[in-house]
Image 1: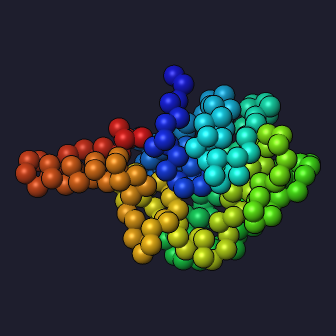
Image 2 (image 1 turned 30 degrees about the vertical axis):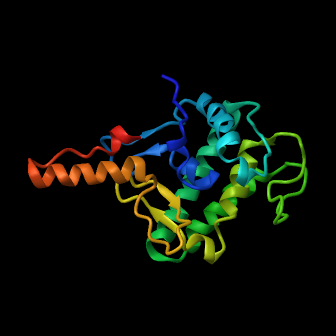
Length: 205
């Protein structure tokens, strides 16, 4: 069944984190699943991200010419991004070996791509041509490396998704208050008044 790429699936705050969150319930061997297990979903995700991440992308569209061809590269970049920044969110600094793997993956994603990137006003380039999804994913992930950026990374206390905390006092607990925050409150209310309930994060995502 095709994934419904709804606004909730883009609560990571940046394209790279939205992509890491295509693995649902990381660390839960019984319930975890990968929304990119079907390579075709990469193209549909990129199309949705063009709209939901328009501000980050500077209005530049994303393209996927051959989802099957880039599937392995996208998954490798997604996983090295998650390993590096999930650990950084917990510890406040980055592991050298995880950074090395991450940089190798971003390098592979950018290899052979033409054009210029990195202008503060247009980090994804000025071209009106759509940008290859894997290249945009690398640029988004690299943007999280500065200390003032990776120190704002958080892990949702309900579903374990990574998200970028833009709140003034950096105190967000949930990737999406309307989903994870409310479900967590409802679960705690039920546990106080009835019996322990099952984890509802799977249903939320």
